[in-house]
Length: 116
Length: 114
Image 1: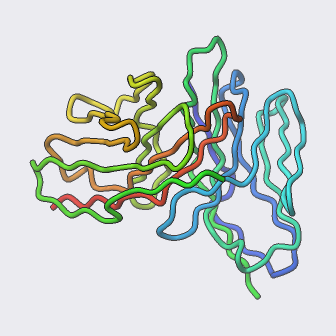
Image 2: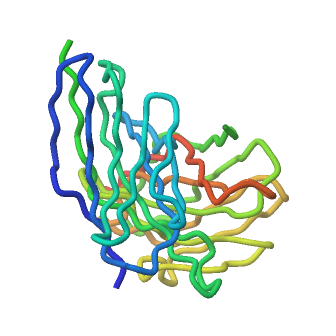
């Protein structure tokens, strides 16, 4: 069945360091992946996404890497700032055969704490 | 990024009562979604809504739940007879017509069932 999980539940870094948040997924048919940031009391905020036909995608200070061989997804945040402190969720969607209308399956989340 | 608002921000209700949660997207859109997040847990899919009908739903979305878009703008989630375990954050999400598969989430409604 579909499941998305995270290796590390918490990550603590110093301001200015690079952060790497990891995610493992079990459904090899997953074809679309998203990273969300969730601050306390708020809804998930879109960070970056990637399709299964790509290995890497870059945004502003963020990079998502996809390794389909080992079914692993990571989010890299460059020059982490205190404002990056939040819970980060990976989510996946499997639309193979057109049977999914965008249902996202979320991982448990990683708490990122950035110390000034 | 499209704006999604939800009302109310916090709803307190007695067990067995009906609640209606509202989502107001501010843009053209194609798909609507409801998710919930029990405190400290991951976000869980409830239902997707396309072309004025349910397109997919999870096991959580039983007969006590319903969705509709009554006026072509607001998208509502109704829980007919709330249970204690319905206490959670409920998030609406939208996907833009003609856009990518990205889903944008609203700020959520915190439902507390007493």
